Amino acid sequence: MSRTLKKKKHWSSKVVECAVSWGNLGDFGSVVEVLGGAELGQFPHLGQMKLDVLVCHVGKLPYYGDVLLEVNGTPVSGLTNRDTLAVIRHFREPIRLKTVKPGASLLSVVTAAVLCYLSSVCKERL
Image (cartoon, rainbow, N blue to C red; front, side, top):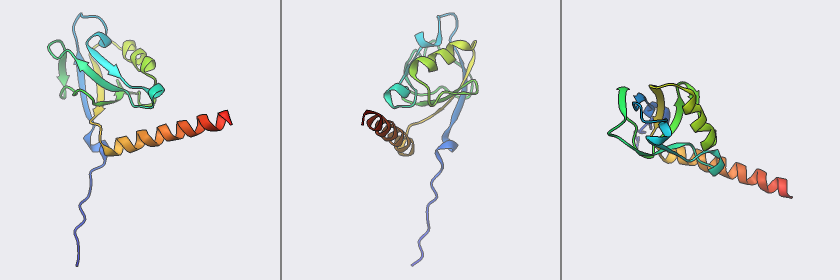
């Protein structure tokens, strides 16, 4: 009757760090699309990337849809899209990115944050 419990790994064990540069092709936003943001009730995440231009110096390149947690040690996981891009523009290349693949646990955190925001908006309007 004893069952073995399978321990789930915490999402923070899946965080990937990399250092990327993109040459003289303008700013990071012209090479990697940054989507989401607090104004949409989402974490900032990576969109389309020009993989032929990006150079990964340390770690491995992030994938489309990966959630952006930090840029050069600065947390961006509560910022608007505009503020996230401003943080990225502030640093010279190469920049260090911390990303994680989105999953069910991150989805529940985002859902909880959206519900909290919506309830505060409703309370303000009453």
